[in-house]
Image 1 (spheres, rainbow, N blue to C red):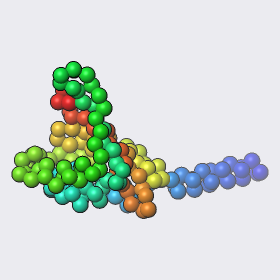
Image 2: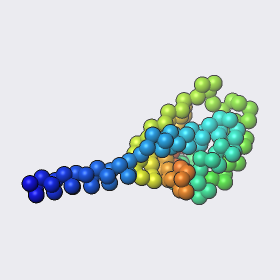
Image 3: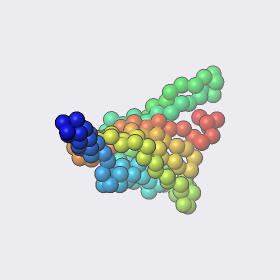
Length: 151
């Protein structure tokens, strides 16, 4: 009997630990919205929408190729530039298709961190998103064009 009681106790403790670290439905909705705000800020020419999504210290990275030397390197962009970009990038309404692709796939969530894949028309973004002071914010983005020769 003592052995069965121990097994039940271990199972209960494990279940409680799992529930405290599992994502809620609201977390999933909020994480998806952050990823959409990140992309739609450019669609909508709305820097406030981008600021809502990104942590002020967000870093966005991709590989790039120096056309003169043919060498690849890591290129970085930060929140402040992305806010400025969202002020003008699509101001003529010609940078995206009429019905742009915006597929958000939540790869993993653990407590206050999440990994997300955003599939857009011409590129993909892998994002790390963190919950700080009750709000989900993007802290890292690694992206590439679908056609890597565009880099």
